[in-house]
Amino acid sequence: MRIYDTVIIGGGAAGMAAAVMLAGPGLSVAIAEKGPRVGRKLLATGSGTCNLSNTHVSLENYHSLCGNAKDFVLPSLEGFSPERAREFFRSIGTETEADRRGRIYPVCRSAAAVLDCLRMAYMSAGAEELTGFEVTGIQNENGFFTVTGTDGRKCAGRCVLVTAGSGAAPQLGGNDKSGECLESFGIRLTGQVPVITQIKTDMRFIKAVKGLRVTARLAVKEGGRELCGATDELLFTDAGLSGPAALYVSRDVSVKTAGGARGLRAEVDFLPDREAGEMIRARKHLDRPADELLTGLLNRRIGQTVLRYSGIDTTGKKCGQLTDGEINRVISAVTGFTAEITGVAGMKEAQAAAGGVDLSEVCPATMELKKQPGIFCAGEMLDIDGDCGGYNLQWAWSSAHTASEAIKRRLSPPGRRV
Image (cartoon, rainbow, N blue to C red; front, side, top):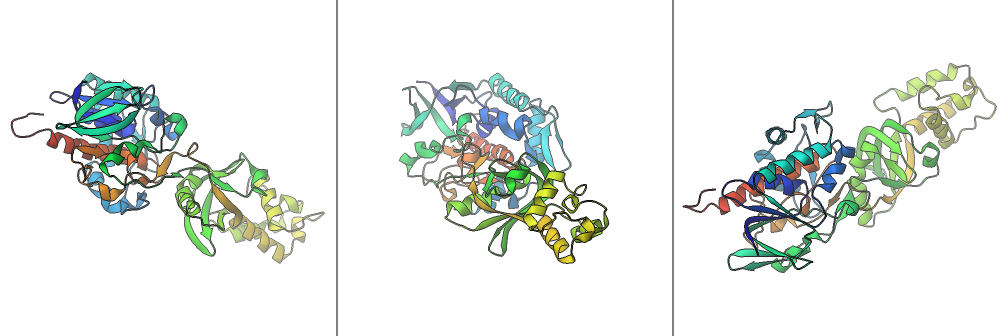
């Protein structure tokens, strides 16, 4: 059984970044990955374009089910900001650029290229990949940690970094049982719920606009109170709502519905930041059938669906024959097109998950387990989840950096050079 300086459990974004940061002269590193290859979830990020980070990263972009996310992520984000992340990727051969919304991508828009650069960097520095190695347990033995796989293989590390991710996207290696290898140390784990995922709704009117994309404001309401909202591209699907606007608000929906909440509503404003009333009233003077009132202002199929949703009778009428009351109902429908929310898509469709290792178990300045010095966690393994837009990958890089620096300090006692 070989003993490494550090065994990294999980070959996802955080694990691979940590391997680059740790491997090199004086430190031996191995990645134990349960799948046949590393980086499968990274390849799917940004629909294959790899949204690496966001220039607008702030504490407000991070959440936790059971802890104070803002206080926990602060040391890591200060120590490894989006600017530092871009420098890191430049150092391994990946040039980046930011779009007008602050989302940072590789210039080549290729997740595969990012994966290649990470692997080349840590393998050239001497790190090893142990694929097909699904970890079942970690034991503290004689000053190092023995890591055992389901196939009986074993390796050991003076330190262990657990970056095994969450249950999101199980078809790409996600596993909501990944934290069980820490239970022998008495580590508390929260349950997990899917986030950054599709919102399921009543389909009475949505099915008529399935497949269409619009820029709109989507608000989630409970009773008369708005829980959250976003203005971005919205996609109508065969189950409800997707696209960036829906993905952004899906966390609140997922947490609420997992907690048993009912009566949530999705409200769409098709003309956000516009004088919708003035624009629609002016169309009353168009010489056309009333069921074409919104054609040219909205997508024709959406416009006619909104008219049906408003409940007005356009049969045999011209636009000019619509009453002021009917026009007002159309305005309300355009700015408040509502569908009952029935839930969210499951882990298979989710880009991330909320939940994981309880934050109270981990030192935020080092990512080290308080109950077991020498074992560290990073990335989505922890009860931290970020908003849609590159924030989860930024957390992967930042937390991997915090853990890597702490591991180097731990493995560098007086007289040993790392």
